[in-house]
Image 1 (tube, rainbow over the protein chains, first blue to last red):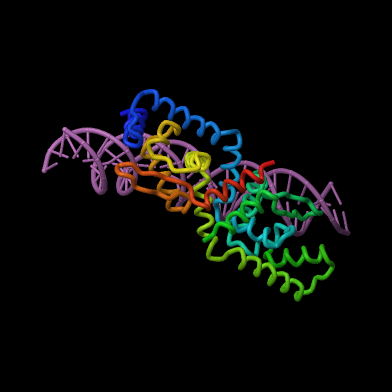
Image 2: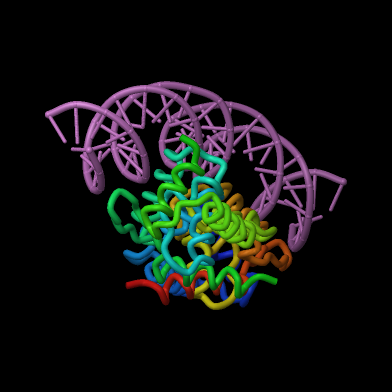
Length: 129
Length: 129
DNA sequence: GGCCTATTTTAGTGTTTACTCATTCATCTA
DNA sequence: TAGATGAATGAGTAAACACTAAAATAGGCC
């Protein structure tokens, strides 16, 4: 069966109205929602969420958030049970996603969180039950 | 070289102090950050983020958020370019992660977003540049 | 320049994920 | 109760991911 037929049966069940006009109207409403949901930010948002959706990367962002300042790559090494290479990968992904900024200081590289990263962590903390 | 040696060189570069005591102190500070970052919520937070970090699932949550109420499974079908099975999988994952609630209504199932889901979307919207 | 060190990048590999298809479960109705 | 429909679940698979190890890049110092 097509998804439109099912929608028609659903609308019949819900409101008694079962004409094609009502189905078309509901479809139009839904497509409006879809258009509003699927704007150009969708891809970027999913990238940001993907970047945070990993234990190593999430922990890096958390540590930086709590540190409330910048940390050197070498300071993560003792805290994370992965190779330096993995830490560097993680830092690059987070930076690309807009969750961290990177700064050179001589031969050291320092990272800090962005406002976006902080906003997400605050939202997570604030919605925990 | 060990990560502690590198940390020692870093602290020397930064502050001139290069004794073992300073290194030990900084290590203790870092481990405190790590402990604060790695609480019992870490795993749950990463699950939530993983659930949202997928275009299909993100779009479902967005649509429900904009709809500002509940929608039937059958209403997603016309909007998403995946099978009904994939939609059902996605809805279950989101529900398990605590981002949606599910309600039976006769033979139809209706979903709505949780406060946690709304908080995350608001944080994303509010931190967009 | 030549060497050492901090970090990044590239390549390769085992694991996880996101989907489809087929099947099962649940609810309504004839 | 049988049949039909809505939705969930299980199995299988191709693609994406997260890591390691090795090589490359880049800065500081002799």
